[in-house]
Each structure stands twice: as structure tokens, then as C-alpha cells.
Length: 467
Ligand SMILES: Cc1cc2nc3c(=O)[nH]c(=O)nc-3n(C[C@H](O)[C@H](O)[C@H](O)COP(=O)(O)OP(=O)(O)OC[C@H]3O[C@@H](n4cnc5c(N)ncnc54)[C@H](O)[C@@H]3O)c2cc1C
Image 1 (spheres, protein in one colour):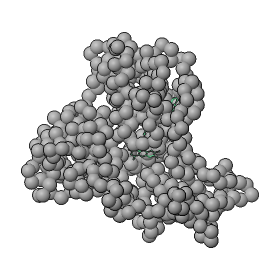
Image 2 (cartoon, rainbow, N blue to C red):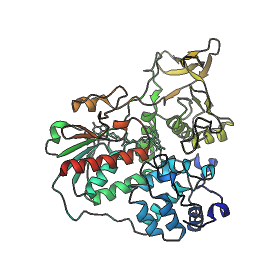
Image 3 (cartoon, rainbow, N blue to C red):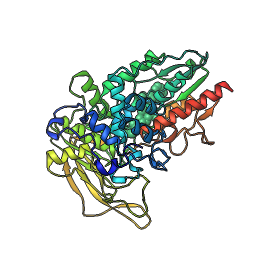
Image 4 (cartoon, rainbow, N blue to C red):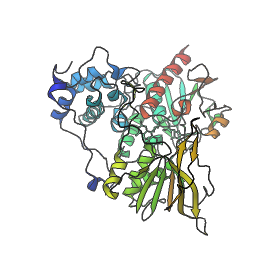
């Protein structure tokens, strides 16, 4: 273990956010990094517990060897620590930025957990800086060809492992840039896009081919030995109200994609929130990203509607450690809204009753209503609680209902009741030479789960092709 008394001698310090005044003026990385000494001190807090819940199923889905690389980092063996980390973690620079760190929530130190996510980011960035991360070109090729459809984290993780196992991999992506939601979805301030591009260049140098602006077509995939579908779960949940087609009503990922395109192109977003009252439907992480983006685009105001009541401040008896704590969190976008507007943008137990439009079918306001839950668990509108709010941009971040049906149809596949291409036996193998992974298989989830699932699918395809 690191230092026997590390967790008593050193307090937990996370990489701090840049202060609101500075970060609201640009789309640059939210976080600042700490020095090497500070990082080693943080790593010394890891206790190498007899049962490391951090790397168990409660913690990291990649089963990262967390106590081992924290110990190496604490001892100053940074290169060895990094090599131990990348045995299981394909892209620590992604998880180091965006992972909610299930491992930290499962840490025995609980609220005082070791800063695994920041430590991992430090290790990988040091590796790139010192030239320890170099293309790993497989010495022997198997002669097998695999097509991976979709270049989100699951597709990239599968492509990476299949390539390392000696197979020739082509990633087919319909968008103009690779990365899936890492590129177009998660905003630049949370995951700078040069970090995604750096990894893609490395994968290309390792022999992986990317075909962009290309829709997967089964007819053109006949020469491949296996096809892995990693198309994500991007079908948004809509609202059951009139005027969803009004100008100024958008789904969150479309809005966030336009915002990232503008950042990358140095232009103004075609769906900018500038000068508008913005309302975001959905109190989750996607909604929070919309809040942070709208504030950077200089909206007049931003409000976030959430149909559920506010979560509790602390764990409830039904949600004990080491489970993920279902408690109130105030994320970067909400903190920024509090800074800019003076109050939390979230309004709980509230939904949209009516979208108000002008004579050119542009949204100009919103009627909201409070909700209450019946004893049977249904939500009902509370008469007399209606409010009218100004709104020129309505962003729907109410979750996702599964994968894109077009891809399923092309491959003559049928999604299950939750919009997933999940084989009945729980494997990744759907039919013939077709496999699935990531959100397309499991429903909308997390980057780290998509990475783990992509790697598991790659192992299964490798066994299948070699059997
Ligand atoms: C706004 C937002 C913010 C998020 N923030 C976080 C976060 O901070 N932390 C976290 O852990 N998770 C976050 N998530 C969840 C996370 O991004 C996803 O769980 C993860 O990206 C899923 O990876 P994937 O590879 O399965 O699919 P995706 O990332 O969705 O990638 C699928 C790719 O497949 C391509 N594709 C689909 N069909 C075809 C086809 N027929 N032909 C060619 N290409 C096709 C798509 O264009 C896309 O590029 C966020 C999600 C959203 C929406």
C-alpha cells in the first residue's frame, strides 16, 4: 500500500474547477491540474484495502487495478503506474475527464475517497508528455477483418483491443468526426476535443482505419469476418405536447452537437442560446451540459425542469455504501447558473403543460405545471399550479429510449422492448457474424461502461473467429 497513514495525513483534494468568471467566458477545459507532488500525496491515501471495492463490480466496470497503480504513483514510479493502469483502461484520458468515478463512490474512505479519477488523468497526460505513449503496432496479423459500426467509446475500445489481438479493423462512422458522444454530445469544456483527436491519430498509427461520413451498409460488409454494431442509444424521449415542431424546440444532443461544431469551427452556433430565455427539460447530466453551454453562449436566463422531487442530501437506508449514492449533486453547469443568476436553475416536480408559439410557429413561452405522485406511482398534474415562463429556446434532455431503428432494420434485427440490441443469452453475439456492444446493446449509460462492454465484445469476437 502507499503510505500506511496517508489517508490520515493528507486530505482529499480534487482537481479544482477554474473559477466561474473565467470559465464562463470560453469553452476550454473546466479543470485545472495539480502538481506531481500533490498527485503523489493524493495517491498515498489509497489503503490497498483487503477487499478493494473500487475495482469490484460495485466500482470500476473496467476492473482497473486501482490500489496497485496508486501505490506505484505514490512511490514516484509513474511510468510503471501508467503501464499498470493501461492494462485494463484503454483510454484513461477520456475517463479521467468524464467518468463519474464509480470507484470513488465504492472506496472504503467513502466521502473522503482517494482521487482515482484525477490520479488516472495525471498518469496518462504525463505519459503523453514524456513520450511513454507510442503507437503499439501488432507484430503479427491474423488475416481476419472486423468492421466496427460507430466510433463512440464502445466502438473505439473494441477496435483498439481487436487491433492489438492482430485483426484488421475498420471503424465505420456516419458523422464527419470520430468519437460518438465523446465528440458530439459531451461539451468541449468537459472533454476537450483535441484529446479525442489525439487518441484517434494514435489508433490510426496503430493500423486502424476510420471511414467517416459513411452509413453502415450490410451489402458492403460481406468481406468482413465479423461486424460489431456500436451505434449507441440516441433516440431521444420526446414530450407529449403540441408544437414540438416549433422553431426553437430542440433535442439536447442536436443542440450540443451544433455547439461543439461552432467551437471547433470558430463560428457562432446555428442554434445559439445568445439573448434567449432557455428552458431545459430534464434534470440529469445531459440537461446540466445544456445549462453550461447555454450560459457560455450568453443566454438571458436558464431554467431546468425536473419531474422527480429533489433527491436527498445524504444516502438513505435503502441505498447503502458501496452502491452508487442516489443523492443531490450540483454539477458544474448548475454551479455556473447559481453564480450567474443567483439561484439554482432546477425546478423539481414540474413539467411542460404547453408550448406557446407566435404566428410564425416560433416558441415564445412555456406553460409549466407541478406534478404529484399518486400512491400507485403515477405522476399527475396539480390543478392551479400552472405558470407561464418566457422561452425562446426549449431543450429536451428527458432521456433516451433506445437505438436508432434504421440501423437495426438495415441489419434485419429487432430491438427489444427497451430499444436495445441485446442478445437473449446475454452475450454480444446477435446473429451470423453480427455482434453488438455499448449503449446499443445496453441502453444509454456511461463512457466507462461502454468501454468495458466494447472490450468484452472484442474478446468474444476474437474467440469466435478463432474457434
Ligand atoms: C450529452 C451527454 C453527456 C454525457 N456525459 C457523460 C459523462 O460526462 N460521463 C459519462 O460517463 N457518460 C456520459 N454520457 C453517456 C456516454 O456518452 C454514452 O454512454 C457513451 O458515449 C456510449 O458510447 P457508445 O459507443 O455505445 O455510443 P455513442 O457514443 O452514442 O456512439 C455511437 C456512434 O455510432 C454512430 N452510428 C450510429 N449508427 C450508425 C450507422 N448506422 N452507421 C455508421 N455510424 C453509426 C453514431 O454516429 C455515433 O458516433 C453522456 C451522454 C450524453 C448524451
